[in-house]
Image (cartoon, rainbow, N blue to C red; front, side, top):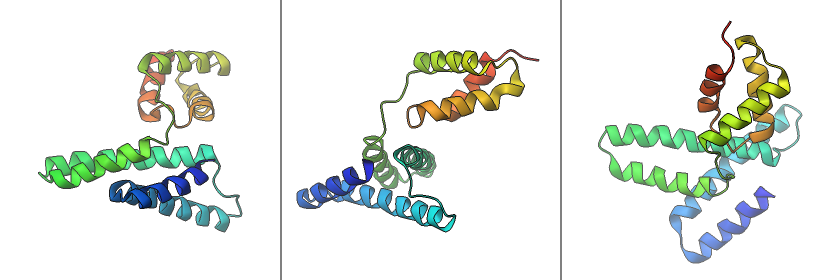
Length: 152
């Protein structure tokens, strides 16, 4: 389970004196705790591993946006810190699918859902999200789905 892995690796980072990794894992645990509290407030269970992967993916995306802004602003030390966090967080995500693998998955989802036009894009993306959480960039996948669905 991912939660146990976070705790174990946080202890390892403490023992090793790896402040960068320790800080990144603490950020993950803080975000996870916030989401768990939010879920409990809504009467839901704590986050599943799939939901945790989606949260991690969102954290990586936020940091990538920050890196771009820091580099534009000439703040390389902050960009480097964000890059280190991305590396730690990404280590918990499954291997990302290549563009060819993503296209094959989209083709399969289109066939599976019987999508015939752009109106069915939501069904296709939902099917992809159900199967490939943490494995593909859904922003890029949505663009590919648009290209691959028949127009009309």
